[in-house]
Image (cartoon, rainbow, N blue to C red; front, side, top):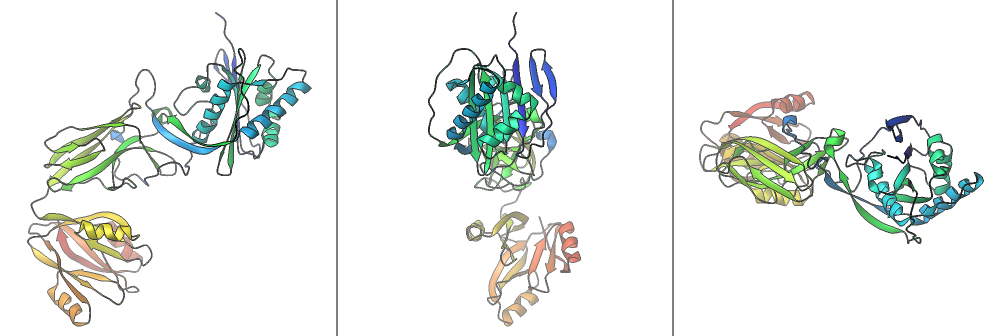
Length: 452
């Protein structure tokens, strides 16, 4: 049996701060040692920080002997003008060494353009899908990569001043090449894919703005895959429900952890299911409908072979029990509390931040909690005290009636805080938040009422 050697080398940084360390990956392959970095880009879908993720619930399924993957779009400008400039410079260097010129090959060009998108996700000779770079094309037997150089002359200078890259450029056995240059914002990603054999000739295309879909294998790089609860529009992660009313819904999504506490949404076709359809069902878009209390698992399997699940322990609320939503105005610093989904959604549409469910109350029975509004500064006040409520009415606050009721048997304490500078009250079930805000100078006013 004969083996054809394959060679690759990587270079990162326009400042040439690179050490190339040859490592024998296989008997017939010479490679570089490379650290990989998965970077956040504008094209990724970021859902914010994970909330209540149990690492034991992260499962990745490898199918057909390959890693499970998800699709990640990479958008940029394919700079064919720079690729052909690099080809000219490359052949000038080969001519100096008395070597024949390399010809641009269509198949290797396609591979190089794809690889230029892939190294924006993972700067390495291993592909983001967990395979080696040579699987990008059967014609490919050598690879140089670089990132950060601003033009063809600087990247060629960098490669020629690095032994491993220079050896690829001047290798006598190579007769063809594909060169990729992808501009993403102000950063350029460069790839040379070397080969030999039959030539598929190509003329230089015009530069093109292009979105390429890169397949990423989380398991290959130790990244977790999770099912998380999200807002209705899928833009952010929220706390998974613990208390539910019959026939209420919650959206779930499969995500992959990225860098800097970011998450990537898995947008591939998905199959959803639950462990107990008498407790919850879930539709094809990941929206669960809760039917009763108990323990249930929401599971998802992607078309790319990823599987993850979220375990829930649900308490069924009584008729009339409802959540109180908390929203925050980042401009004024005010918080608002409401049992009305419509009011919450209206405020969010005006730019308020949806902070999810704060606590649960009753809309039908129990001790009344009154709501007042100050038309002068925009503050609201909520109180169980009828005396406080009527006193605020008498000094010009608007009487907005009963906001909700504290149901009999409620056990979770809701703390009240007062900001002496703004006049705002904040309500929280978190003793940690209460103590932290008191330490920051707010007045702690103790327990305002109890919730479910």
